[in-house]
Amino acid sequence: MERKRNYIEKVQDWADDHLRQMCGRITPGKRLAVILVMFFFFGGLSIYITVSSIYNIGKRDGQRLQIEHIKQLPLQGNDTTNSINPLNRPEYGRSTEE
Image (cartoon, rainbow, N blue to C red):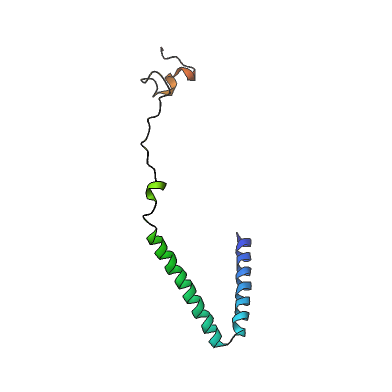
């Protein structure tokens, strides 16, 4: 577990260093432009996914969801009085006439 945590920390540090190097090279105006473009792109994507999900809530429910009634399972033994106690079943080596 400790080895995984160290690996995750190394990856985070590597990504942090590279992002800081890339962002440090651009001017503050360009940095603001990149942040605004990303904000509007991801905001628009979020709104699109939300609206399309709400729009498609009631479509094709009848085709996907098919409900059937529960069927009765057949009993294993012929004698229903002895079928509850497994020690009285003939298939377990004891007779029912004891």
